[in-house]
Length: 312
Image (cartoon, rainbow, N blue to C red):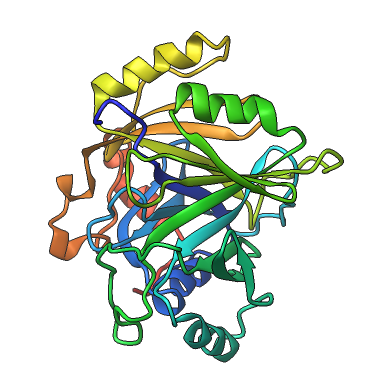
């Protein structure tokens, strides 16, 4: 089991104002900020990680909050919607909460027998709260306002919008070990039985979809989870055998990663469980301090002065 892809690891998106992004995910959606660091390629920009108590794989939504970023556009070749699992009977609570905080929402719907509530964060990122057919037993992060009866459990699914379902489906099934589950209209659902949760990828096939623009309010990439470095490098060979380009192993401090673009254009990452977010902070203090990649530690004062202030 451990040498398989274990569902979703994390999803990374682009935001604008850092304080607005932090407030939305911690105060409205009730996530924990488990790591506050900077973009490896742009240390003048934060990199926030939001998740459960320890930042478990399958709960982690990360952001690059670029101040003044232009608005992006969802389209072909992108992950366009993120679904969080919530308990049965909680959607009415969330509807009222979103009204209170002036969060844009769509109508309650049903898909694959599951009720869902679509909404957008303040940057326009598409999200959904979904009541799974099978109860999600993961322990949620609780806040004063959001107790276990309503709190999010982590990812339920992610949706990719593509002009042609088949080339990407082949990667999911033949390389990552997912299985086609069912189809509703132009939505195709793929699932892995390697894990119980964060196990679903949906593909919307839209042949005439315009290309997406990756900027504010859109997803940058999605990451799939593997156990460790050895399994990671096995998957590198599997991707290369499909004739696709893939990076060398990259140390992201809290996991090791590979990146490649699947045939439909979505940026896929494969990321390890190890070493985790408690490597440089205790669990009790996760997200409380600014953690820098080691190559930037010598520039800490300059970096701290250049980053936007953040009230936590």
